[in-house]
Image (tube, rainbow, N blue to C red; front, side):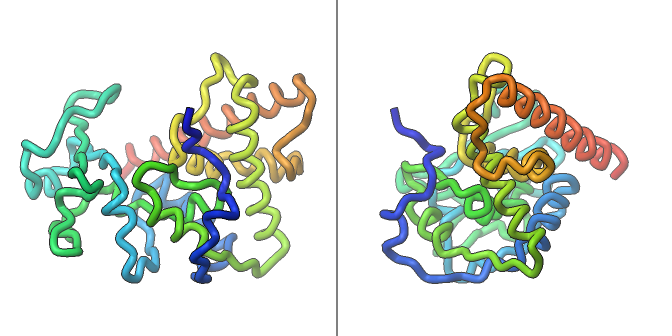
Amino acid sequence: MRNDKRPISSTDRVKKQVLPAGDFSSWLRCMRSTLINENGIDVNCGECNGCCTSSYFIHIRPEETLTLNHINKKLLFAAPGLPEGNVLLGYDKKGCCPMYIENKCSIYKYRPLTCRNYDCRIFAAAGVAAGDEGKAVINRRIMNWKFSYLTKLGRDQHSAVKAAAMFLQERSESFPAGKVPTNPSQLAVLAIMVYGVFLKYKYGSGRTGNISSDIKIAKAIMKASEKFEARAAKFRTIF
């Protein structure tokens, strides 16, 4: 069985080219804010087209009318497990978004919120690859990102995010019905949402070796996740 949530390996480092990812604390604050208010995030993409050419299904909500008006309805299909009106935009045989035309986004001004909020630095922050199939470009980009740390807190925060990601991958049995994220993006986002659990308990490795401790951490993770989601839901209700 392929492990799409595999850690970044040494074989991924062949084409290493350092790209400044910014101060980790500042980035983390902005990323968490983006997850709550969905106002988009600035990413120094340069000439990278990874997110447009990596076999991603793009979620589009019913309220994104401007976006929907600029996409052929034949390219959209209902999003499984989500309320009616939520749709997905697929990709072509080469793994490219159908809106990616002549090496650029043809609807950039009206691109989906999913695209506006996407930042492949989440994988570098969590210490995981974006997946295997069709994700080679993004995985190379992930390896190139390098965060800086203006304070010790920044390093501790980064260690906590990685510890959270590791725990989610290796201690799924500690969660009710083994419920953990099903893809690398969800895993990385959840690690960013709940990193405070590991910052608080200082489990730098993400491993305890103690079943009761693991269950305690899992409960703390679920509580932190619910609290974060509640903040996001409240913000979206107000605005």
